[in-house]
Image 1 (cartoon, rainbow, N blue to C red):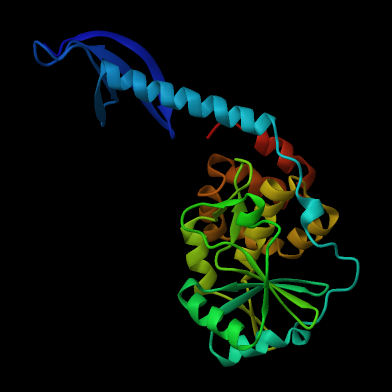
Image 2 (tube, rainbow, N blue to C red):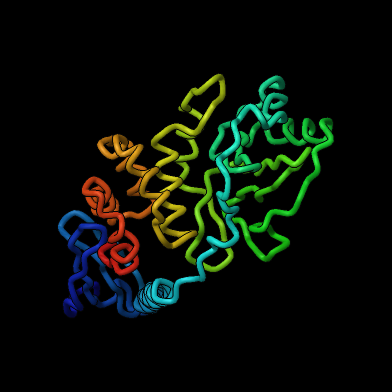
Amino acid sequence: MGEKIRDVRPINLIGADLMVELNEGYTKNQGRVIHVQNNKFRYLLTEGDFYKVASDIMRASVELNYIKTHLPTSYADMIPKESKEPSKVTEFVFLEDIKKEEVEYRILEVRNHIITVLIKPDCYKQFKKLAKKCNMKRLEHPFGKRHGYKFLYQMKEFVIYEKDGWYYEVMCQLPCKSLTPKMWMPLDLCVQTALWETKREQDGYHYVADEEMWIYRMTRSMFTSIEITKKDKEFLEKYKSVLTNDTLRHKLSLIVFGFADRLIELCKQGEYDKVITEYYTYKEY
């Protein structure tokens, strides 16, 4: 028992060459078994379990290819237009209350009468009490649950607060649009951790640090807008210095996997127009 019958086929898994091998079972009643192995590693499955795993992988591959070739409609129309010059941060009075109460925050974006603020998850309850105390009006977010969106991995739902004509878009994690329609997920944990370990100080306010901001802007272009606009290109060029950071490459490898090096190369060369097409046709994960 346990004798090799034949090699089924070689495979490559995350850069490792492996052989799928069919063997006799180790006991009389076990049936045939599968080894997935090389000279340093062996994974054993029953023949039935191998068929289940293989079919799951094949189904996942087919579904991913379908999603990538049937891209969702761009949500750019739902993003507030920048018809006027962005307001100064000092005009958002509630932000001063957040600072006074020592709620840890990061400013992500300012456009017209809207400011996007990230609140550290540990401070979220404190933030909600403060919003109620300051008579902030809570509004439904166009990307919220009421509009059919789901938030994965215990991600907190986006919220908008309004007071005196100023709008505060509140998040707790840097978001990423899932390829599955109407689903949001947080960017990788290493990005969320770095978000609160670093910051950019400007005029007494805490902004998202350059590296995390670059990652957010790029992934928003790739997964939400599904285009890199002129304004996106200008922003990405402005913060191009982060492309030499090893930490950026590591974070990107956990988001776009094997495409990370190619993404960095394209951005260094300023070839932003190739990013979307190359990513959605990329198969060498």
